[in-house]
Length: 77
Image 1 (spheres, one colour):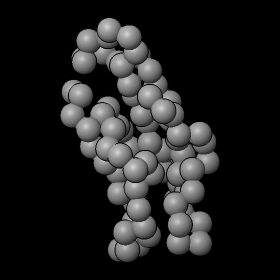
Image 2 (spheres, rainbow, N blue to C red; image 1 turned 30 degrees about the vertical axis):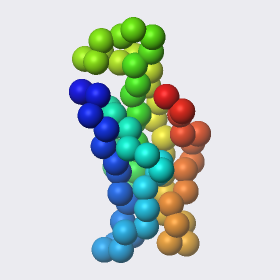
Image 3 (cartoon, rainbow, N blue to C red; image 1 turned 60 degrees about the horizontal axis):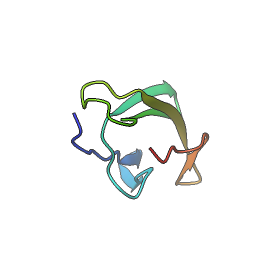
Image 4 (cartoon, rainbow, N blue to C red; image 1 turned 45 degrees about the horizontal axis):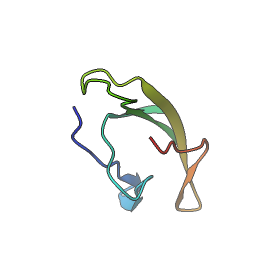
């Protein structure tokens, strides 16, 4: 669905922030290691229907020194 959602990362029980300033639609989160999580972003390209976005990128995030660090570029989509 096109409904935007936001990811909020925590370091133990303390919130440390969001990976993007604005909510995005089509977000999936996957833990990949003890200290790394992957956020899959999808977006519609052109006139695609809401059911089937083909734009896709996965960004790995890590908490370093109490701050969120993107290990891959965050898509603009």
